[in-house]
Length: 121
Image 1 (tube, rainbow, N blue to C red):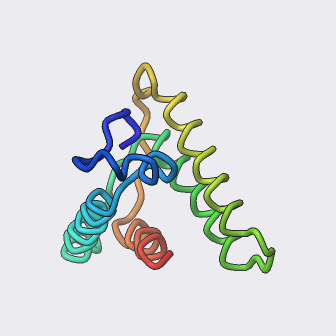
Image 2: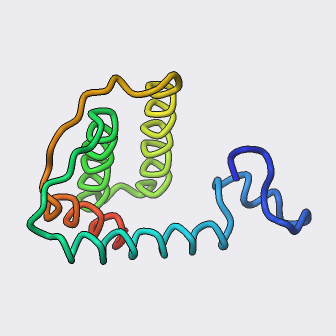
Image 3: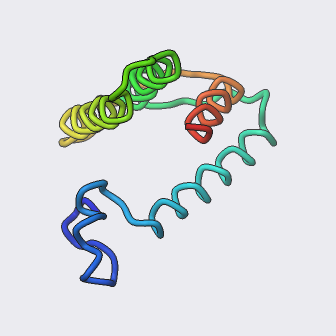
């Protein structure tokens, strides 16, 4: 959606352009997250190596989600969207020319906790 080629129905291009996805992409993301979670449940005791850039992204998103859940600000939805968008753009800029090559090992259980939190919010 963010590549400038929104869904098949031209009359609806405005809304996906504002939010970055359409219902189809949102459901596909949900399906993929559930697939990853099911795989992680199966290998809950395993260790996973993630690029340091990905771990940084996940930790920053975790902070924003925690802020959102504890916030009582009136415009917290907009601020959540804005902060997540900023994190995403920083991540894209950081990996524009590739990953550094260093990895961090985490447990599948730790990743499950984060993905479940994202799935709920």
